[in-house]
Image (tube, rainbow, N blue to C red; front, side, top):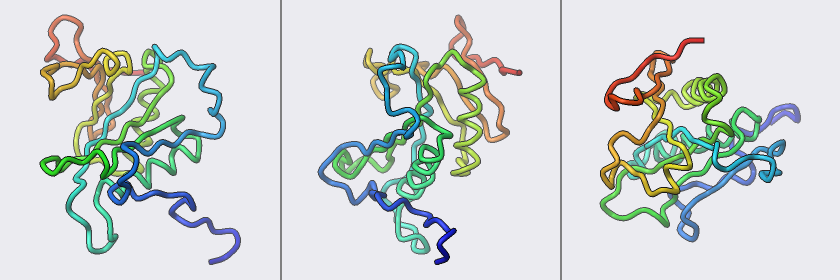
Length: 178
């Protein structure tokens, strides 16, 4: 490898589905190390769910592992300020999906939220709608699996369009244009 080339995987890359000691793997941008400057009540995240069981023979890892390697690069290159990934430690036998949370600093900054979604989709080629949830809702215990069906406030489509959930008719989405 030439000196000017960087390896694809970070030297400190941890394969999520081989990690059994910690429930989450975290990565934060070097330029955003001081999280004291960020209001925790404004943080939100794009949620990416991937197969964490079936191993791709060509890559030698699951879709979840590979997507995490791409997301980690986005954080290292200051495209995202932070991310976390579920691991095998948190993997119950009946769960076949892992989650990757891609954070933005302020969920009301719709341009930044969309910029992050566009970058994520380009990096991992996510094949479905992506959904965005605030950390406030996470702290309040609102999860789809516990019955909170309308917890996400934004969605991002494969056409790179972003939508906001209607405040009254929760099943309805409105496209956000800039």
